Length: 337
Image 1 (tube, helix red, strand yellow):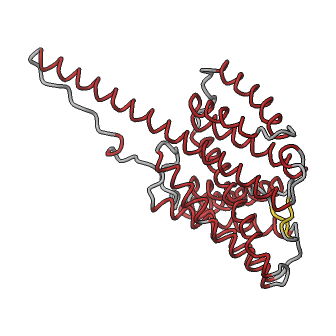
Image 2 (cartoon, one colour; image 1 turned 180 degrees about the horizontal axis):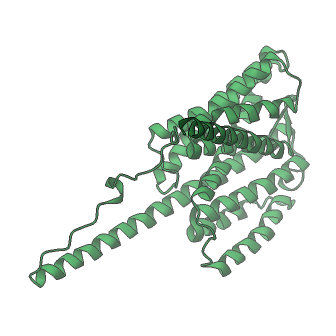
Image 3 (tube, one colour; image 1 turned 45 degrees about the vertical axis):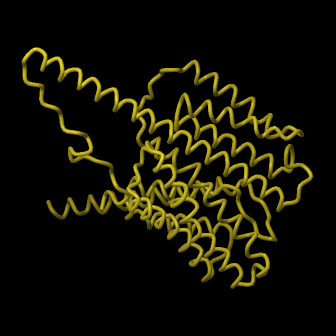
């Protein structure tokens, strides 16, 4: 029986690793659909595999990292032949999300993103901080292999770093939300959700492809989605906007018409970064305020019940244990080990 149970655990772990690898590879192929050339190097404005890798490590635990390495290896091999520097690139793509998960664990990150500090941690530690590793390793190996001139290091490094960071900012929150979502989702506010979807599908392409720079029109849409639908609504709008604007940028149309490749990348990444930060941090702040209001309302209700019992000369009812002290708590990034 012990041997059979061990085989089941090993088989389940192998399936988990292969599933992560397959999802990583699929996300990589999606990310490669739109590319930009910076100083002769091909980069992607958004690299979804980094966001998927960070979410997998937070949800499944740190031991799923071989799946990330396998997926990264196949993505790189789909672009070039096998060489020793390929292993270095794969190592950078694996270590970066691992570092992000470890840093978030040390920061006591909650996967529901229900606090402003969770949003700030994901931005500063998971996206901007940890992705320095993959960008530095990847571009450094290109320079060492004489595939990139030394004077081109910083422009390519910046594009690589922002692309990886955008993957974390846009993809990781959505995957964490899907993991915690209730299925089927409740149908409350479906009329408003439909209206928001229609407006987004009309407004976003108009702002992206208009010859007049109208990208600022997206921000009221993001604010509407965050106020009414919090993280799910705001991040879905942000992802839709980022994808449409990336298509316009790589085609060189709309607000990106007549710009050089460097200017296109700089404008696109600045817009995507500002929009993703606005959506993530605003929705986290609204969610935190919502939880605080519910806690205050619950405390007031309990106080009223206690006063009613004291007025009637009765002993106050026993209070249930607080969820934070009941032993359940949040699942850590290292869960499953």
